Image 1: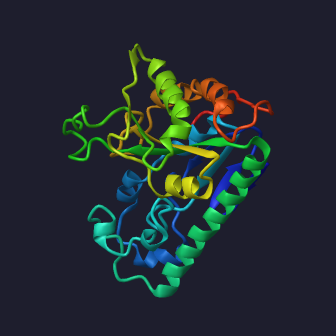
Image 2: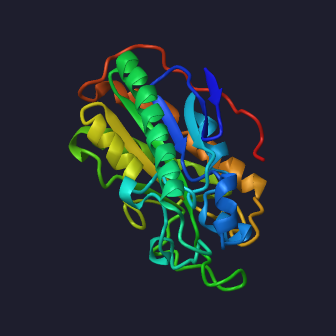
Length: 281
């Protein structure tokens, strides 16, 4: 089932695997534009472009269309609208303070997104008993400038898997299998550096799902280092992006193998692993 509106686009298919790209969006509603101080390039640098392509490895996915600078779906509700520079990496986002009415409109979008997410996940829970969510993000590693050396790779893995809010005792087999299979992928003649909770532990979306579905959900907050693009120009390296997508896709059979053994999961059911969709934009 395909659905889209000004807030999100989603595809809901069969199986217990779901993916979200909540920072993929770049749109800001028209009423906010007169207040906006940041240029588009700066906004885009802190967003997660191309993650809307990565989520499509699974049958069910949700992509947010709104920029995180309008409403950040990965922050607690009281922090979801950036009103001060310290909430947004010191960036001066607004020319003048936002009217309360506009803040409330953004929070209504926040509420609508999470209501839809709950509807989708309840349906999957009813059908499969338990499920895995890929909370897909990307992160910068050349913050000192386009010509400066990249940040220290010892502290910046190719893929950071956040599991900070997870019941590790229950979901441990999912995490271990995902890490193992992703590390095993041949990425242009080398292995990806995949580590757990080094840069990020997962934030609001993962916490919210784990609170709402404490016995059935396992959320993997997957942060890809922006090795697949130039983070200063926004231009993708399509070959690397497709390789990362293939690496992510390679983990699906293993997850479907271990998932039925988790408490609360039902064995059997229709588990569908799709083939490659369109090439990335």
